[in-house]
Length: 125
Length: 154
Image (cartoon, rainbow over all chains, first blue to last red; front, side, top):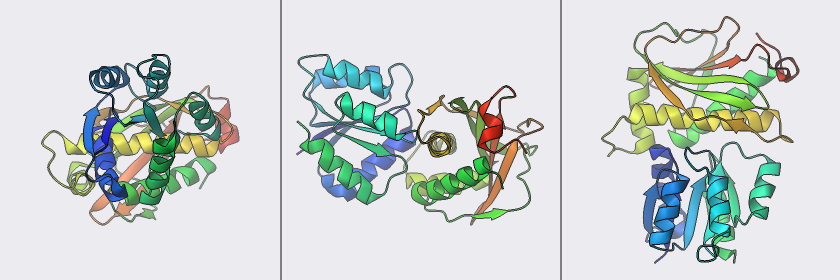
């Protein structure tokens, strides 16, 4: 069973992602939710997930900050990360991938787009 | 319809259809932003375009849309969360689509209730959904140098 951590300050966005993961083939995943990057770091340290799905635009510590924090910590650096945002320009997507995101996803997303992004993120080393 | 509203409309249609499963059609009359029963979420457009985007509707219209989006089972304020998430998505998409080669930056959504005072040059869009009307405003900062190039203020 996959352990997935959803990180988004919007409760609705977390619920939509949770619902979408079920439709994308991860119905049996153990899903945890937190509302910002700081809480995500705590959750990852407490238990390494198979995948972090993080929004970019969040209070306290945003998604890019979370990604940088994960990649700079030897114990956490191998965690797979899928970044999502509505404000996803090609340049921003490229930067997030360069920083170590396994895949990026633009909101709103279709089930097909989510499946493709999940495949990319879970395949990333 | 200018370029900003064209992109905003496309994003609003796509977002409502994907988040709340609600097909929309644009209407000519503006939403009554002086309606005391309105609830809305606004979000700052930081860069490349400076201003504010507001998404709102009468509470009675928002409730069924939010219920469809949530699929039930939410005990806090589903309307506020629904408006905030839709405003967030539209604001991000609007900037990304208007300026595909630049990095869009937006603020965090802020929820409000009651009549919403409008800037005199606000760009307004109103659409019908099957449970009522929802409105979108884009208020451009007066000093925004990109405003004219992006389509001009109505």
